[in-house]
Image (tube, rainbow, N blue to C red; front, side):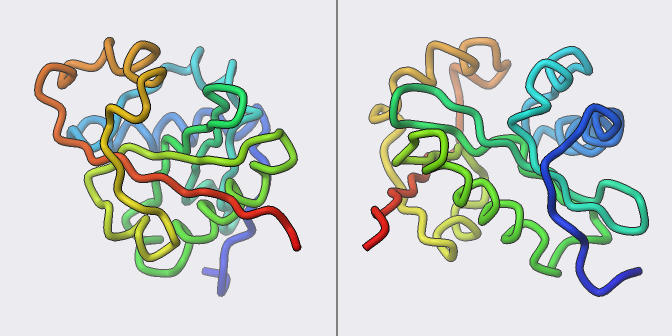
Length: 158
């Protein structure tokens, strides 16, 4: 294994590995499953961490509204965890946000502490009403959701 995987924008050739990685966590109830169709349609939202020619992590920055985006589908392979790959993927998404006009990035997570270490703050899900009516309504856990909302507010460059 190389010292640190390269993080780059995803391409269509990465989609089958993103699909495998995301759905491995979805099978355990840790995130929403994604179809190949959804991933191909949204491939430009994704960053991947690539090591030895394989995707070992992924995350997407998906614009939700004028100034708001969701960081979603953050997944790092079991062997890649604890090596800073998740942090690198989140940082790549946050770095891209201003370029698309986004000033706030949120995530729904079962591990808020990870995001808090990166500068996110816990917020009430009710502050994110647009999200509830887009994807959450299709989630089997919608009525009994235990995910925690976290929000990162980007500061303008000085």
